[in-house]
Length: 223
Image 1 (cartoon, rainbow, N blue to C red):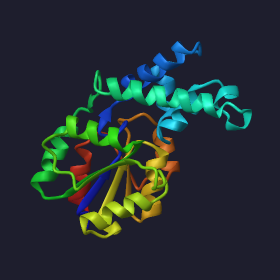
Image 2 (image 1 turned 180 degrees about the horizontal axis):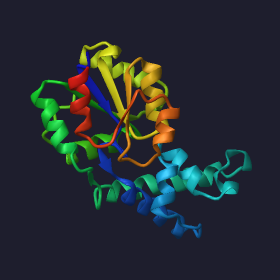
Image 3 (image 1 turned 120 degrees about the vertical axis):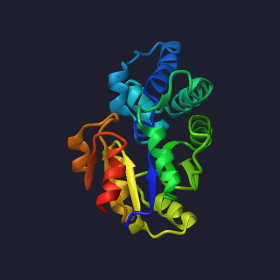
Image 4 (image 1 turned 135 degrees about the horizontal axis):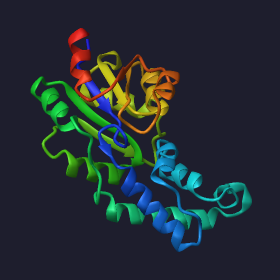
């Protein structure tokens, strides 16, 4: 029986892609590198901010093997700073998310957030976007913990919540999220309203596909 849920942030709880893309493009443009479209950024996110920057930069700059690591670290720091400054300019919850979280709270279903976004920024954004939701944990990318799809932090959240992994649903919009759910022994459910394809979600191991947030309520009713 599902008693708890871990949600991804970008592309699952909130539509963050425009602010993220604008921040990275600002840094790219300032250094004379080509900018990218929002559509392309949707395929770049999901593996942490450092990987996003490596994907956004020209290959000869992004590769650590080319001796450009000092420049890359500078660009990464600039992008994180720029994004932190403007992370909530256009970002908003996806339609139906606030209603879903309200229903889950009323039912005493434990909720948490796990993102590959920097931890401090994850906490700031979730606190600003969902101030009424009593999340048991909100965790992002931390120096001492591996990023998704490694299951370590998902299992840490289960311990914090006092529930077994089998009692958790892991809801996200990418193959990385589905692989995290599988690796942690949780129920991986794909959020098809997000940034990646249903095919990617299924390939990642999704046990079910949610077309809209309220579908999770219907899923719980069948559990």
